[in-house]
Image 1 (cartoon, rainbow, N blue to C red):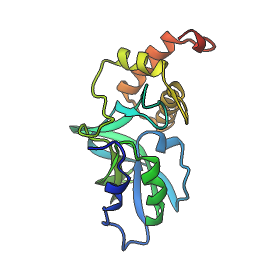
Image 2 (image 1 turned 90 degrees about the horizontal axis):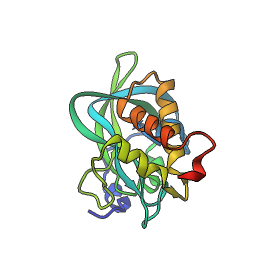
Image 3 (image 1 turned 135 degrees about the vertical axis):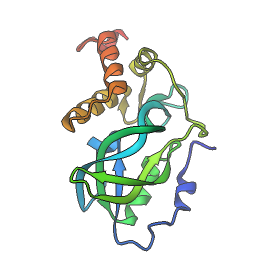
Length: 195
């Protein structure tokens, strides 16, 4: 599958007749909502795990040196904490472009902290997209992140902002936090130029 998923996402018409729907964010969508929304609140989805296995050719890296960003992988019993946004279907034009590098809209059941649930959408980059980098050790991922930069900034900032956002949600994501620890050991504050 091509890394550019805009056309594929535009074929999903599940919510076209809705006045609003819920979008679940688990990566940069937690801390960077560059779209209008009606409501925002912490939420979770079940049976998915957040992993730095997706390549970023367009935001945190380049086609020659893709960065690493998060996607979701199926994991029975897992819980992924994030942020849910109530949006109108018109926002898909912007979101499909933002998430165009391998991510597909996927239906999911979103659970809010009060126990209520709603069907919504999450963008997932599956392993069959051309930008998928796959599994690696947390140290290898940190080394990869340390040397990447793209039009949206350096890959390091993406990781650090995500880790901070997860802490604000009281989420304990050992995959993300272990990569963060390795990255900080590789590039202590003020020493990024040595990488």
